[in-house]
Length: 503
Image (cartoon, rainbow, N blue to C red):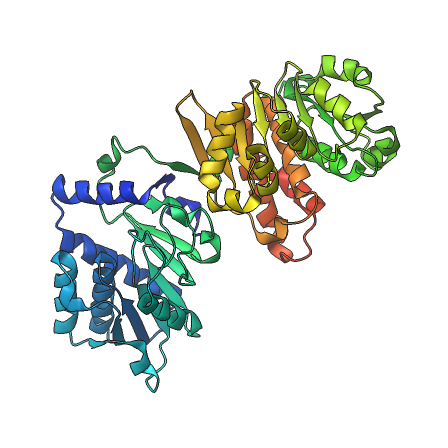
């Protein structure tokens, strides 16, 4: 879960880039390092008071670097506000240097109790909030036993946890857990958003994400290109302005969806409904003859045809502006013939589900297409194991985009949209919306239809993919208002329609 998108910037950086931003603030704009540390502590303490206004007892875990300095100053600020405060110094504070050493001295001067190990807390007052200031963004290896024990203590505590900059043990670039990681309820990150907060296992460890820029001027980002761009709800109004009063169905895009092998009519039906609800003017479906009744039942707006061979689709192809190929397609000879014929069609294409599995078997490259793999399909496209994709979601998305010259939507928690610009540059967007209730059959089919419907209207594969992922994820969150468990794909459809009209 994240804080409202307007509270977070859209630019997301690597850990090294954020350190560079920090240095520019110090060296170019003359903000002393201790002043930045003080601002970070003040922002963190303000977040603590917002989330837990009744808290009286604070326990702060400090490590051996600048993150520890932030923690010592949070402890000092809490002491100044009359809270009971104890600090567990996991790293020897006598080894601190620079601003972090000043922070430790300031904390000690304020009379804060500093302990050398959590075992000394066993018979003490239980904390209302625990602050994680063990490790920052420089972690590049698994935790050593001392830090791992501190993380275990924090996670075993019944008190809520505030993590400073990033939950300790989480890699700031990959979001992967380095042996163990703090399970935070709130994470407040400083200066710039780190990419590791949006990748890997981060959604399970960060809790609510907050941000403080510490007053570093925006000019510091000049020449430092973000690794990712966050999609925000405000993007919908830009991509989907109100229609002109003279609009007609032909002007709103004509989409052909192909899929639904024997017994798989539900997949192509859901995709077609997604396209209709996102505003495609005309929606055609080509499916196995036994699925025609299923597709059209209760939805006469879908123009559906039973297909025996690719030539049966000639009339629909001639009338269409874009294609969706793959939902429920299957791996039969019937599916193979359709795939071979339609993947070469000279119009924008969304390739999904079994369409991607056929591509993995028979790699091709073309223009103006969108690939929508989940991690298993992405692994097949790359000749890897799914676990390898999840270990490097950013690298996997960019690799697929480059290999197939395709806009690539890597689905999952924090879906990624990778767009090739040229042979060297891939632009990547990340969607922070969505929820575990969407991990159910058919939700991906709805996404394929939503992207296809937008592609037919916008005629821009990149914008269609970004807007579709965003709209679909927001619809999933709206559908989960009554609970994540038990959500079904068709629950998204009324919300898709509402969100497709943002103005």
